[in-house]
Length: 214
Image (cartoon, rainbow, N blue to C red; front, side):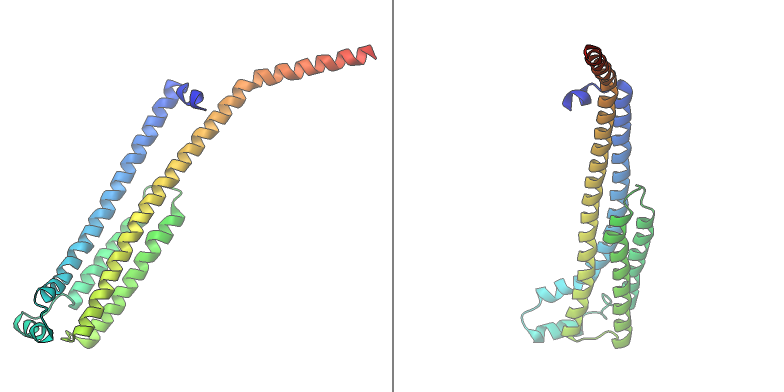
């Protein structure tokens, strides 16, 4: 098999280089697009979680925590506007995902990105309903629950991104190897055609000789 790969014609080698160059370019564009969208979500989420950092720095007890809440400016990290910003980032990302440039990846694209993003957007809508219903609560348990939900959404999407990229790369490598194997098999069959013809001719001649001897 290695000899066949080394013996590929210059045209075949050029096609291979073009294929891998185009593939790498597409994957780089996809990575950039997904990372930009993920960075936008992370930036918003980091702003939202800054309140948690503030609380941890001053978390010497419930009293100090309550005092810090009273002293700082009105909380905005769980404000409906911020939830809507996250929803917009997720929606924009879903639009980019739908324009995925490589064919044959519909199943992992739907399973790893489209469906999880749709679920994440739905979860944001539920969180938004809760925030609008309860307002800006000063209840620690409520804030912890809200933070946990938003953090869960971000972690889930990040995980699906990484898994999807890995699945795409593996699928494309497998596809390329299959194409090369098919190419090698076709070439081998083509090279064997004259030998096959010779073998058939030899067998036919031997058969004729046997019939004559009878």
